[in-house]
Length: 73
Image (tube, rainbow, N blue to C red; front, side, top):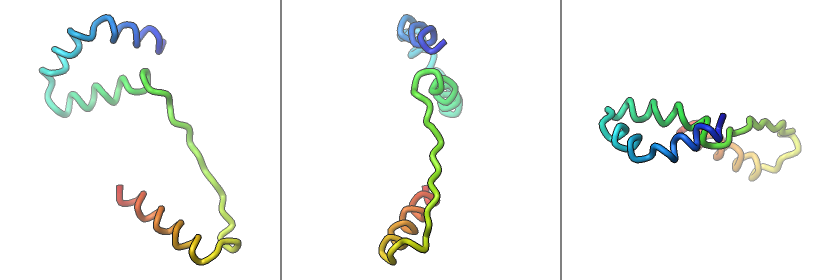
């Protein structure tokens, strides 16, 4: 299916670009969101269990900084 969609997009790039340019910004985002799953590789979920009792104080601070930056995105 991905190859078919990629081929369609490649073969119709000029028409798609012209139509895309006519879309409202919210519709452009909707379109991009819908085709991304067919064009880009899907991200895999990743979880990691950390034994906090084994971390140094600086490692805990670093981990907290990373979590706070991620929540602020």
